[in-house]
Length: 401
Image (cartoon, rainbow, N blue to C red):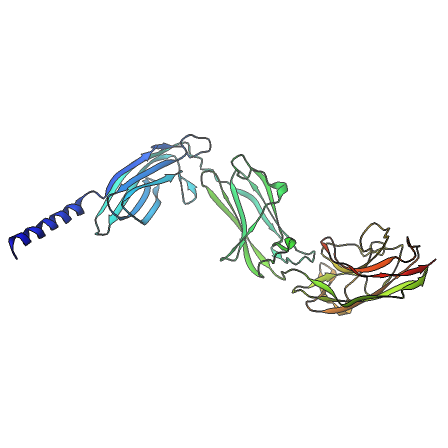
């Protein structure tokens, strides 16, 4: 090895050694050095700045006699300037008043490490948590299928301080958000939920025609985060079963009215075929097929009152003077054809998925119609929800009087 080559190697070694021994953290700053994490305070947060001379892995934390509070842990950084905006909260809790050392540690790829210290004072911190008092979920077994029974989940709580509140259900993998009822949604000027009672009415999206989450076990979670980052969480179990959108259809050649020419005080009869074309049971109620109304009656007069979610076959007519659509309604099938469920001492009847039933009945024309030959037609009614099929098979019935 010649002298020139030896000199080059020694020089390179010295340069590398000098580089390895040069400062890794070239600057640390805390501005301001005193903060008050509380809404309305001018210095609610501070900027923790540091500079790296070369790429390194970095830890940044606060420490005092109460413990160690990590802001960044083993994070890769290139050379250059970096800044952390710190509002006084770590792990969703505002730190107590006190003096803290701010520590920035860095280690480069050669294993050379360095740390620098700063000081941060916290005064007048708001450490009060935003409680969700009296958090309740009812019912905790939920059947979102529009049968009028356990179709909705009501979630209530009392919020003790302004906070951003998020409510959702989760199976541990996916979250399904739940919106607050508009009637209880009151926001502060900075868009946080206001102190007071709050209520959520969850239908799993069924009312808007969306499919509900799959049947299974879930958790309803409510999270409240105040302006300082203080976070609280409440939760309750929820079971979803028999969920789905109910669907039924009048099938075949629809229905058949007969006779089509009758004298006053005689009866027009019909026969209609209906299929449950959905994936969930459909709740229905009487009167059973075969029942004959008079034109002066309706389902309420015969004490078969309307109920939310109930499905029935209806008949309506031109010039209906009763004041409600489809005043004549029949159960979708005979009791002995339907699936019976006992609930709270009451028997409930269901038309099961893909089941087909024939509904027959009659209307005795005891009142003079507004014209000699009014139209009569069928409809499939989901009570207090929608008219599923309307004006099916309009047929002229000539009434002699």
